[in-house]
Image (cartoon, rainbow, N blue to C red; front, top):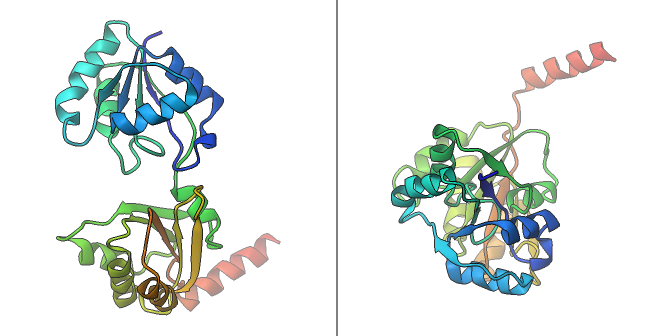
Length: 240
């Protein structure tokens, strides 16, 4: 049956593609790609020959309706981004919404995404977390951090190598330099690295070691007020 498939692709190591993702890409009538050159390299690695069509943040408003129309006419479409799961800090949301509103079935495959490995290996609580993706580059950046300053859950940000130091400086200013942080870069790739410590310590590391690659910053949640901690301990003791 014709539908839209959301297909996660590897965030670095090409061996992280799933068998189901490969089968879906092979069977699709059309593959929409954020960057056709990046996806062409992946398809060549997988031995898949398909014509690719561009679907990125600069044209998604214009193409979403026509893609939904093609699916409605009986075609199967697979959407991929350059890396990870489409829609997570990548194009995809508008197309999914358009298909849902048109009554077109959408099926999302499980697969690679950078935020989960970074969170799990941070050593911070994983049962509850707050994913913020990329912060605003300019306007609203500080305001958003201030809104998150008292967030008790682990907080996850994506950041480019060009703004990592500036981001850590802002985190130190708003969250406090002693707040714990874990910064992962180049996940699944040859030079994968995670640096942990206080914001001040990790900031000093990246001031003296040039940031390279794609970054995921995980910040420990704000400590809960002592009164609330006592309340939680009491509730736990009562359950036991």
